Image 1 (cartoon, rainbow, N blue to C red):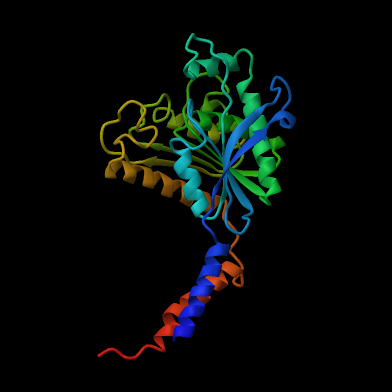
Image 2 (tube, rainbow, N blue to C red; image 1 turned 60 degrees about the vertical axis):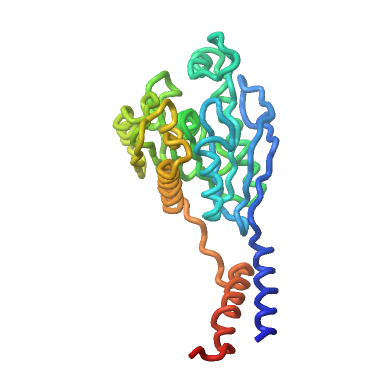
Length: 315
């Protein structure tokens, strides 16, 4: 019995080393080689978390305006999707020049003015996504899902419409969380989704007050199903939220500020996105003889069934 227990411990330890807890890797990526002018290219940050067993599907995440690669929505999403086995890479969005006298803040109007003037942010975003794809390719990733939150979803929809055909890897699905409409093309998701030819998830909270999110849902769905041809799969999910829709908090799935109800709201969002990604970008089923599964299975047998046979009967 002691010998079996010792063997189980050794095997389980080996399995844990093989399937170790994934670690964040903070990257400095460079978009210089991936986009034409007016994007001159530049370095930008990203957070990588590799999936166990070198998965063939990776997820690139785009954060919201004024945030960062580990902030609201994208931070929890990159961790939860990695927990499902995906390699995730969350990257920083480009920030246009201040145009309205508020240099300390990244205003939406700065993106509007840039898109209709210098046109820096969108070409640079396209180049950054390609650089991220190239990095994932170097890790053995073969296909990509693109996920954006808030401004990241507007820019992600534009990438899928205007730049995905030149992707470094096939982008097989796109999810927008808190995706808005209104404003000018390409910031209006209803003006770009009509050119997207992969499955799309349009997910938002029921109390989301951000411009064009709830009110623009019908326009986004109509755009996806229109010119030049209807997309293959459009999924709309409205996550039920409780409490007061304070400021921008419901948009970020934190309108109850860390309370159990807020955690439920965020958990629903994570589960819905995870289920959708698993459906439209499934990971290959691991080989039955893979080392982690074999080791874990052997350890479980030794600690459960194997040891039970050596255990005396209880009266």
